[in-house]
Image 1 (cartoon, each protein chain N blue to C red):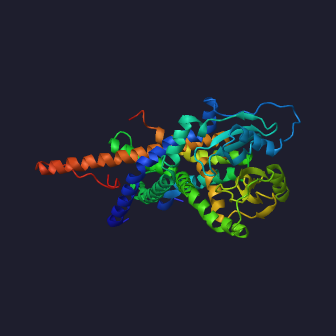
Image 2 (image 1 turned 180 degrees about the vertical axis):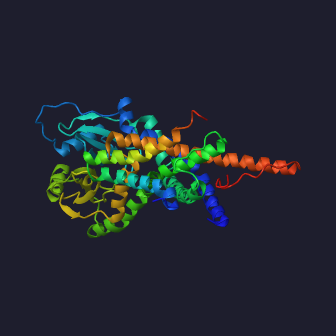
Length: 59
Length: 388
């Protein structure tokens, strides 16, 4: 699991797959499908916010 | 990656982004209010609310609904009438001077009493209309749309080349590292890479579906020139209908022909969704996915008989599916909110990209200046942040 490829691309691929799940899920149904969609689509947003917003105070 | 191919991909990324960045910033900024157009319409008081009626009031005769619009504008002709899936109490009726009138009059008619409820503000009022036009065609009609489509293609090139460049720039870093406390350039480079890679799939999908949407007019014209033209063969030489058949009867026939489906919109003769001799009645399903797909039922506008019902061709189906994926309007409030945040993240990616380019240009100039002065030149700014 510690291959250089996964270290570099593991997170982007995971977030990409979650984004796709989020985009497709809500198309297919309502209710639980929308919830799945919101959670999956929330992952890239959360990752961007977490890594993008931390460290500003220290700088 | 060899330095030769690194340089080539950098060149592709730089120029594809530079050309489209200003337009993409505009699209991101105008797209933000469009995500919330329903809510903004509500705040501005531009949305139409159906009045309460006695429970058990049925559907009004559609001919009366049409008549309500025509009474308001006796000199105009009917273009479309449509219903939103979640508001069966309202018919949105549009009338114009001719079947492709861009300055049509929108009217909201009560679907139960056939009374005019309101004349909604055109395209949601001055503010939303401006946002919409800037977003869709830059006030330039079809050429504007196709131009924005080209910018969308460049965006896709920029995203793909950006992914290629992601590797050499971040290979030695843990995912998500943003190097604060060193140079401002390094910090923004890391942020550009981070937000670029987390929004990657979303931006690709929204960019590609946006590009597909710019072809809507062209696809419709193609459909008219091929399938609708074929359906019109038997009508060759016939004069357009002078008296239109009952809309109510036509829709009842369409509903009977497409059980389990409901009317999404009706195109009147001469509009791009009908033909000069037909009503185009577009039915949609009731489930989440099937409600996005339309089945056209073509009805002879003179006799009111169904002449043809066929599946939409694949390219129009693709267009219809690409629309929700561009608008982000199919998953409720959370999806809207995430759409807005992803849009904002994209603005940061575009802005930081622009900053990195301007900043690098300055650094190169400083370096050249220092060399020309014969002084000790600072090391040239390294293209690939890989060398640190």
